Each structure stands twice: as structure tokens, then as C-alpha cells.
Image (cartoon, rainbow, N blue to C red; front, side):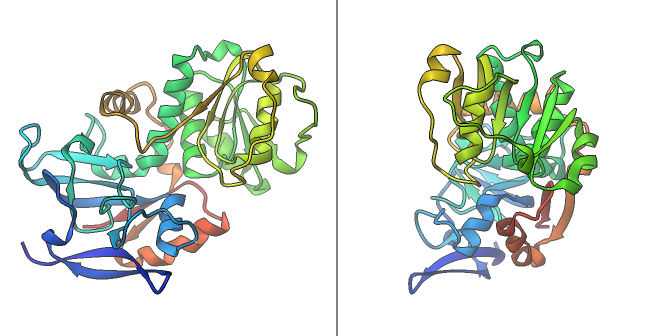
Length: 329
């Protein structure tokens, strides 16, 4: 195999440095499946890793990118053959293993997911970790008894990738959706995805009591901190709160009262470490009843690989709406 292009992250003199390099296959982590990468995507986590704004990598150097989709180039695992269309999201990519920002990836076979019927490589990366996380959250909530008749689901960080896709999926499943955002200009976008109501962060009365008036059936939270605390106070009896992110803060100030008096469930959503059987089930749901209806609206940019480094700052500044797909080949 000829050398190939990769976007690699280094730790040099205690500073994070990321750059394009030419690599050989043996420069990558060992793995049973080699994939010719066609598409990847950009997640907030990718921006943290590539810029050093967050310490995501646990070893250096590594190829960046927590998602990838492409075709199998070779495999020593009998489950995969040359030409199979596959994807990987999370599973240690760009944390402990080389990721998807490269023309080739060498992967642990257990992490590889066959592309679901009816979803192509670009669509799978339009979803990526964001779409998988949204669907996993809904799956966990429904496993704990969440149904549309229990009241509206509030989605925080609504204009981001996870938030946008979660709104689309929830609306398609028949839920009433309340979208929380700090971007007043995003109302039309969020309503086009299926949000019934827009709630601006500046309009929220966070309250101070352990429990306030119960106004939501459940929640998908991308923010953490004061926002998540407010959700524990305002989700109704037996409601589920899926905690996905900490863009606002990692802190949580609450009491046990919402959990023991209202039976509220706080569900931690770790999409990267999801076990393979559930990972396969969730992707099947994404291709069927959880399939987003407005994916073309959610994908606001498709970047050529060469322009990848220019995209990260907007994620750190919080100015990105929807999803960005990266065309590798």
C-alpha cells in the first residue's frame, strides 16, 4: 500500500499540535479490519482533541476523528469481506486508537458496524456519533418507560448536532418537543426539524427549590451544570433525563428529592463505550423508526478533507448549527 494522507495529533513540548502527514499502514494501531475511508464528520469532541482545548487523547500521536465510514479494504475477521460498506463511531477512535481523519483506518473488528440498509456512507456520517448518541438516548429513555403521552421532551443545546437530530427523531416518534437554545435566530430552523416550542436560555427561571413545578415528561441534555440541575427540578414523575454532554459545566447541584419523590431517572449516555449488541440495535433503529426526516437540513456543511483544520474554532466558539460532514475520498 502506498503512503496515505492523515490528520494526526501530537503532544510536542507539552502542546497539542495537529497536522496533515503521510502515513504507512503500519503507522496505525493494530486491528483486524482495514477500511478505505470515504467520509467522517466533526463533533465537539473532535474540536477539543485537535486544538488541545480539551485533553481527549490518552496517548500520542494518534490520527484524529471519532467517526468514519467507508469500505473494507482487507479483513482477517470472517464477518467482513473486501468491499463491505461499514462505519465506526466512538469505540476509542481518537482517544486510544487512530481515528477516521485518514484515507485508511485499521480497526478492531468488534467496533465495525455494517452500514444499515437504506443508509449510505455520507448519510451515516451526517449522523455520526451525534446521531448515534441521540438515538441511544431515546432508546435508553424508552427502555425506562418513556412514551409520548407522558408529556413534552425538552432538548437542550438544540442547535448542535446531537440536539438537532434528537429533535428530528423525537418528533418523528410522536413526542412533543421543546427546544432550548441561546440562539434567538434559530427558531425557524428548530421548528422545521419538528420542535413544537422554542425556549431561549435567557427566558429560563432556574428556580432554587429541590423540586419546582413539573413541566416536562423527560429531557435530553447536552449542557450539564445549571441547566441539568434545572431539569432535575422540572421533569415530572417517572420521567427520564438523558445526560449527554457538559458544554456548560461538569458540575451538578441537586438533591435526591427528584429521584425518590418523583422517581426521576438520570441516565448517563456513553455512546463511545456502548457494547456491540446494543450498538447494532440502535443503528437498526436509526435506519427505521428513528430515521431523521430532515437530515439534509441538519447537515449545514460538507468539507473537503484539506479544509478540515479550518473548521474547529467555530465548534469551540459555539457558533455551529447542525452537522458538518468531511469528505475524505
